[in-house]
Length: 117
Image (cartoon, rainbow, N blue to C red; front, side):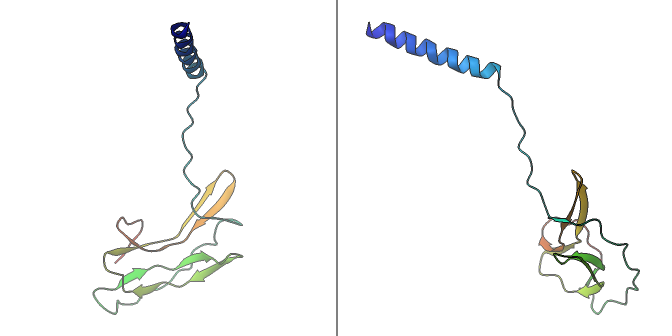
């Protein structure tokens, strides 16, 4: 009788696994939402004059609209000294699923999204 129970248990496990595989749906994991939801796209960029660099190591950080949490504020373009091994990545504004998102820019090590010299 012990063998029969063991065989029935194995058969039940096989059927359960096979039955669950038939109706199995694989969902791709969604990538995490990047940035913060904002009221809409930023205003048009402000035209600026780029002065001569203060040093050969200086990197131009173009002016951009920064989301303050309530509204956009213009951050004027300027020359900056990059941290060692870092590049400037400009902010990103995007629309997804009927919402606008803002991802702040900044100095980041490694890959560059938008750096100018």
